Image (cartoon, rainbow, N blue to C red; front, side, top):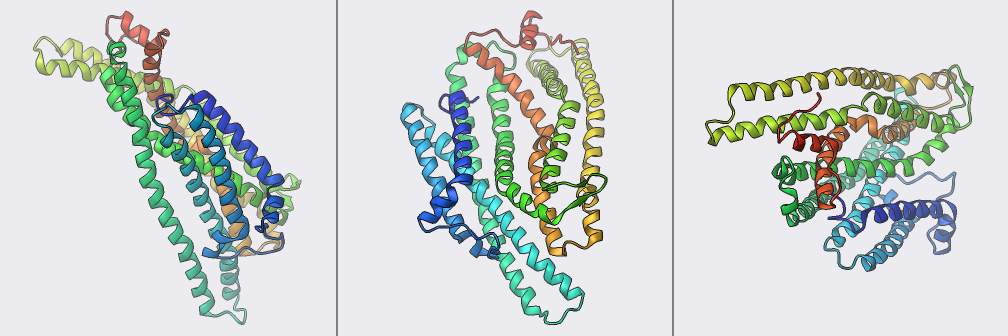
Length: 421
């Protein structure tokens, strides 16, 4: 699944993670000083960021674009030398770097919109309070600035969708070519044709959504956590708890991790059940296909037994999804009111304006949603894990390793789906 597309995937991803952490550490420690030394200094703490398209061309943003390019070229160049014979390095290395960059740029559009929210909603509050000096031209100008940001967002979404579609199809092609080169060793695995054609397609398609979203979540945390840390100065008191320094920052992390742990615990059995579901469906479908060409196949007794396995597995799956959905939807409802609940003392004290509240709500929501990656996409992750389990059998056969237990059960049963449901 991975070594067909990425060079030495374990080492590649480990080194990539370490390199990324080093880049982030350097950026937040000596990065501003280096940028200032080359004429691209960061904005002063009391300086308000520009609104609209100009935000993307501030000196500190231009410095980041240059900084990112330098570190990517170093990392990618080393790996191109290490894996010079790997056929997919241009896509797996440079393509991955480009996806990470446009994900970061997409997060920057969210920051630009959040910068816009402050003055717009403060102006709206003043207009509704009938303060003098408010004109329609001020609102029109802010709407124009919003359209500038929106245009950037449209271009990024189009580029992201087009490029990632090609990226994941190349990944699927790499898997397909690799598995077909080993077909003589794989053809005895149950549902081998389905695993090569359908599972690789679904694996690539699901990774397209999950992978881009994961990168966006990480980038959102990198960008919005410092913003939320600074915005916490507007919130001094919390209900019940009282005063906590940088309260919004810590609450966003604690609340999101709680939701992630809750959903992971509630859904811990679902990947295996989904995998078994694919197995019983495949066995039922395979018998029906044989019945199209052979009159002695797909007999009522056999079909009834196979469909009984399908029914039994689905009913068990529904039961486990029942308590999983109780946890998921309950957390979702509480999450909808959590921020406003903790801001009640701040509202009552009148310590923030409408514009600041909008900026806090946006930053808190971005951080919270990023930490809740497992919460928001757990069902899709479950499907991906079940596909991963099926493709692992291919990896085992290629590497002459023991097959996963569930595949050994199938072979020992003589090709019949006799699984402990």
